[in-house]
Image 1 (cartoon, protein in one colour):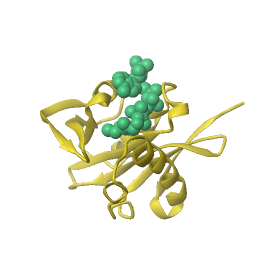
Image 2 (spheres, helix red, strand yellow):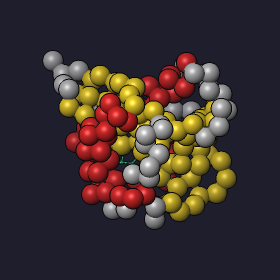
Image 3 (cartoon, helix red, strand yellow):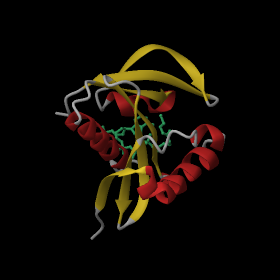
Length: 148
Ligand code: COA
């Protein structure tokens, strides 16, 4: 039987898995410049990786902006595995991790097409839409504690 395992990892523990997913989703599928995606901040971020039968299929990273605010970013699920709750599980793992760190608030820069995905996870729009990496985004924030 197939099983999903979510892991909270450092970049050095999972760099090959994280790169494999982000290259396919952001560089190939969304045409994002690799130097924007791999911006040198992975080493100091915390990472979530979802494994299906040991194969990496989704990821996100958590970056601490201040001791009061974290940013969850680089959220990606391989296209063959979308629509099955994997992205939601990755975000829930990130939120749970931040809760356990007593982080009061987190934010995302949501690609506008994915705003409803984050809204279902308790994030609310802040301000106006803007362009980042050539893609329309909106800032969304959620305060902790964890998903009910
Ligand atoms: N628009 C609206 N709703 C969406 C959505 C979208 N693009 N993607 C997911 N949802 C909804 C689902 O319908 C589901 O709703 P439900 O809980 O009521 O059933 C919920 O959000 C969770 O969906 P899930 O199946 O966990 O999402 P996913 O595994 O398909 O992952 C993404 C969602 C956005 C991570 C995935 O589509 C992806 O990797 N996209 C390409 C990269 C990207 O754009 N990342 C976001 C950068 S901000």
